[in-house]
Image (cartoon, rainbow, N blue to C red; front, side, top):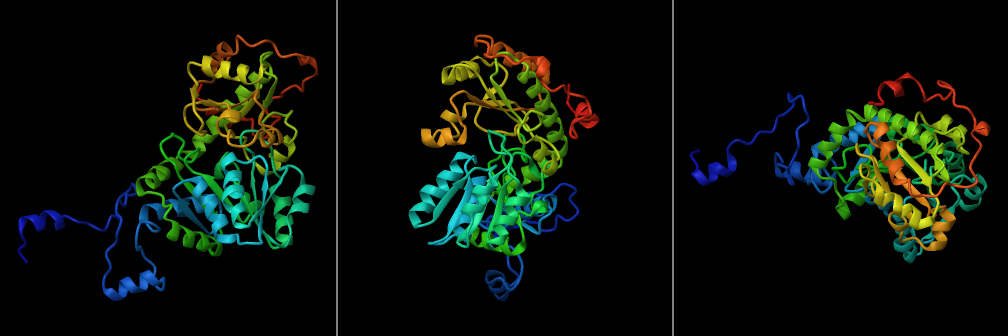
Length: 422
């Protein structure tokens, strides 16, 4: 049939088979073509598989979901427009009036805000517990608990929750356990293998790793992910195809980036620990961390987030931030570029002073997200920025600090040295 040139401009040149493309294509489409009216009806009803509309179904997004599910050793995954969208979807899917959520205190501040402010007013009780206190978890989880939620290691305080123990407590009462694994990624921790039911990620952090994407993803059993797909279909908090494609490419280098970032972070944490300008360093990779032994049992690395406390409260902390010339002042984590923020006035600023105090988010706390720069350059930048701080008193006697022996730490070996990139 011979068509008008205007029609030709719209219709000619479409192609559908990209199965021979070595790099995954980007399915930049909102709608999909059906073979017939009956085919459309079957796919809309769910009796046949296939894409219907990109608000909840897209080939590039599905490729990302399949890949991250395999990496987390889960049956299925559902991608969202952000990590918070994934967390809120869990509450929308599984919580009802009369049910409760048990959540560890030191999670990302907006997580608690979402649970308390937006689900609390609907009659959902939110019980907040100390991440590290199993007795509090046991007392809070009951037969009305929809799910327990923890972030481990926590951000920014690097507290470690016992995933296996809390999962047993939750399952004994018929509750689910969801774990935020954003800080370690599947490369350094697999909560599903430790008994968790759902793993959630703010995928724009280490998964993307380049500061380009805002995204979220949940991983778990197919029956649970089906619930989340239902929420996604209604709410429309969908991940875009281009962002999914960027994530697919980034996952291919995740193991290299996480190994190098972790090596840099460990070296920097030890250097900060020895500085007279730093009151405390918080990093699970340090042997002095109170839960280092637990971290070793359930993690295969320590990640790139380092907490440090400096003298002078907010004024002291802000003076360090403002004096930095290389490290970026930014509130995210997981970039190739190192970033620093003051949690009490940014990421946790919407919590009350009492909540921040209970969570350990003091005015003296800084969170450092270590990137891929040469670590000596990061040390020089921090050293100059902290020069105006008074020495922390009392100063520890180095003779009483545990000596570090190369190779003693299970994650401190040739791989880290080889990929430290300088």
